[in-house]
Length: 122
Image (cartoon, rainbow, N blue to C red):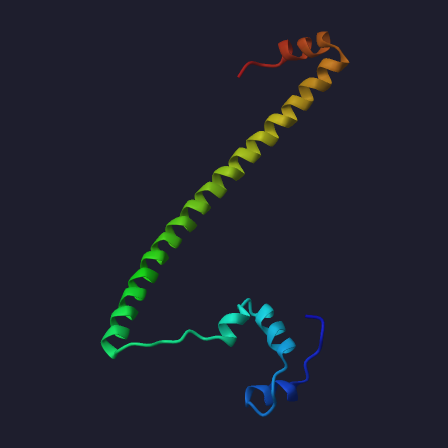
């Protein structure tokens, strides 16, 4: 983040021997890609033990479902990314070929036709 942090400050912060200024908390949250609100305002949990266990199971199931969707989307993304690379490569090949044809046409079509006739057929 562009500033040096003395190791003593880190040690005192970790051991809760010094208060942490809000600016430092915000900088650490940015560095760790965390939302500051979730650090400052943790979720309040209320309910009986049974309710909490049921809610936890429901959340676990939802997280599992989302994980499956995430994995599928990552696979789809990889596949689409691969197809996109192939399309871009082919497009670049065609653009190079088009440039060559346009250059030959500007020089004079007769020369280009003669070269094409002499080239062996595929």
